[in-house]
Length: 136
Image 1 (cartoon, one colour):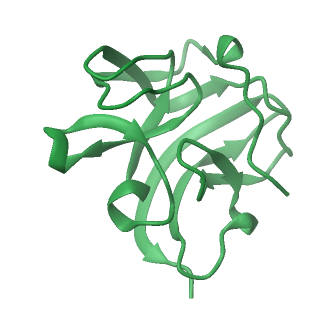
Image 2 (image 1 turned 135 degrees about the horizontal axis):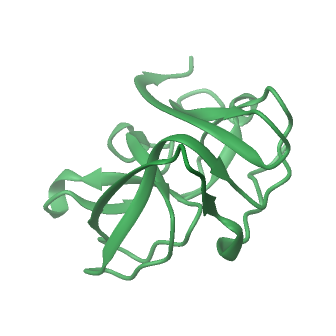
Image 3 (image 1 turned 180 degrees about the vertical axis):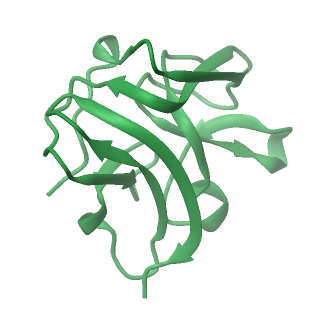
């Protein structure tokens, strides 16, 4: 499989979406998982499963932002995405910065950060869990 194709304008919070706020440390697009960069005062940047620090996602961006701008991101609850997901599939931070992929797409040495489970073809039930573990 491949990373989800997400249309930024179709990333929609629901009544159950838990939201946090921060400051972007790079260009971020709605629908991208983000992590807090400890080397940049905790600014939010697109997450990437290739490195432990960048794999530690805190949520999924709800709108776009440039470096230094405020950024709201979903940390839990349900999130509607324009992507076509497989019901019951587990989705994780991808090895492509800002990407979301099925867990089966991760390879040896990639860090596993669970983002959630698809409850419908367009809804992701967020439950972010940073394992800190690389696949063998």
